[in-house]
Each structure stands twice: as structure tokens, then as C-alpha cells.
Image 1: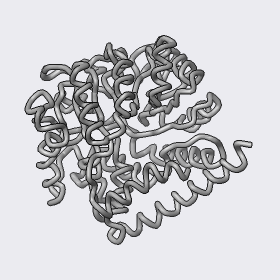
Image 2: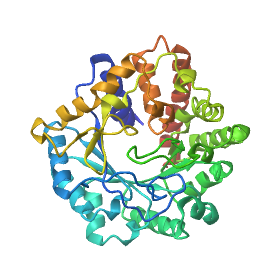
Image 3: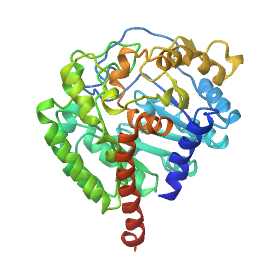
Image 4: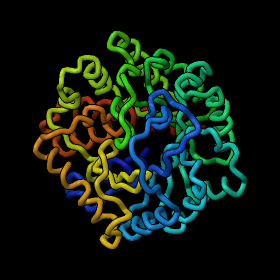
Length: 390
């Protein structure tokens, strides 16, 4: 627990107190190809709008070189399905030589087919693998993922990676199809030896801003009539987590997820984060460089890119990113929010914590609540370390 505080919370406190000197990570969508057909994903639904030059291995080398020069040590490799990017393992190996560590978000369809050499590379380069699974009930997983092969392949991948002691985190999209069974899902994950599960509701704008959103996407979320059931499931998960060797982000979800879902249901034009925070700060505009599979440097992960790494590369990644984000930073400083801000649930927990750190007096009610939840979390971590590992 102490190492995680040093890695995560202490840098955030320093960043808010002394201004952030550089981003903490880069997120890259490697490809627009996927081998699943998720009901809440624009790629999975085959929605296209515009084309462009896709990222190449040379592009990834340049990005990683720029990260190394600026001492940015973490890159998140996403998709589409990143394992469909033919040089993925070579990219991981190259990043390792530059002391850049990779987190890979995959659906698990093909990870179990990796060679021994590939698995060794992932382990030696300290890679972390996130596998997206919505349910261990095959009927639900097949429906949300659009293929009956989704669950068996994901299970094979979890087993293969775990055998090689490569850290695996499960990512679960909370929807109207699985909300009622989250606790059972979580306990099965624990029995499988998974050490971390992260939950998030559905982003109801497009995940890929160059593509239009799926029709009626917001209706895939949990309805307001079922909120009590969802909150009950999450609280049961939190109680289980406190006494078992597995972790989640539930303590960070509880203060805001119901406001997010209520806002979706009401469509009243209000900003859901103003129901959570008195004063909001978007940390991610300053902490994460988002790069699309076309090489666009996005102002944020839900915003269209107008600047690409293919042009003016001599300026360097940080300069290009600063130019790409300057407009939206100025807008948010003046409380001019964009329509997709209301759908920003993927990173909202981090933005919430950063808002508390930056504006503790204005957000003192939430500060007290989060201090209580974090205190319980630290206590349970210490208790588990002392008694559960023996």
C-alpha cells in the first residue's frame, strides 16, 4: 500500500502544489481493428466516418523516444485490439530498452496464443495486461462482446498470463446487462487469483471522436430504477475487498456513479460533476497525452484531434501536445465545458481526486468522505498484509 501511495497519490499532491512539469503517461490507440463486436463500441459496431494514415512501428518508436527524452515512464497501449498490431511485442521490447513500461488493454481473444518468447518479453519488460471482461456468464459475455468465443478465450489468456506471473487486471463495463451480477463476478475473479478488478459505466458519447456514437448508446447504462440494486452490488464488493487479497476502484466510484447515471436518465443539461464537486479540475488535460490510431494528438480522449505526430515532428511531442490541448484547457479554466465532458467517466475518479487536492476548501465535503473511504482502504490493506499473506 505504501508503494502505491508513493507512486500515485504523492505525485498528484506534488503536482497540485507545485504545478505539473510534464505529463505522467501517454495513451496510444494502436489500431482501428478488432476481433470482437462489442455492443457499446463504435469499432465493434463497424461505424466509420473518416480515414487517415494509421500509426506505424516507426511512429511508435518516435513516441517512445520522445517519452524517454522527457522521462515519461508509462505508455498505455489500447485499440481496437492492440494484439492485432503486428509489431506489438517488438514495441514492448523497444520501450523496455528506453525504460518505458507498457500497460496493454486487450479483450483477451489471442493473448493465450503468445509464444514463450513473447511472454518472456512481456514479463521482463514489466508489462501490465488489462483484460476486458463483462461477465463470467457466457450468455452475457457473448451478448455484450458480440461473439461466443469471448469468454473462453479471455479465460485462457488469464490463465496463461498468470502462469507466467504477468500482472492481470480485469476491466468491466457496467451496463444494464451485468449490473445485477457484479458481486458474483467479482468473487469468481478472486477465486481465479485475479488481484485487481476495475469497473466503469458506459461512456455514452463516442469512444472514438472521429466516428459518430452508437444510436441510443446511453440506454446501455443501468437505468435509474435499478440504481439501488447497482449500489448494493458495489457496496458488497467493497466489503468483500476489505478482507480479501483483491483490489478494486469501487471506493472511488461510490461518490459519483449514481450522479452520472441519474444525469444520463434526466438529460437535464446539467454537468454531472457539479453534483459531485463544488469546483472541478480536469487533471487529465495536464497528465495524459492521448494519441489516436491516426496519429492525432487529442485534446482529451473524447475530443477530435487537429494536430498529428506526422506533421511538425521537429517540435517534439510535448510541444505538439501543448498546442493540441491549449484551447480546451482555456475553455475549462473559464468553465466552458464541452458536450463530451458529461460522458467522461473513464478517468473521472482521478479527476475527482485531483479536484479535491487542488481545491480542498471548496470540495471539503467530498474531501471528508474520501478521507474516510481512503482511511478504511489503508486500514484494510495493512490488515491484509499482516494477516492474509501468512
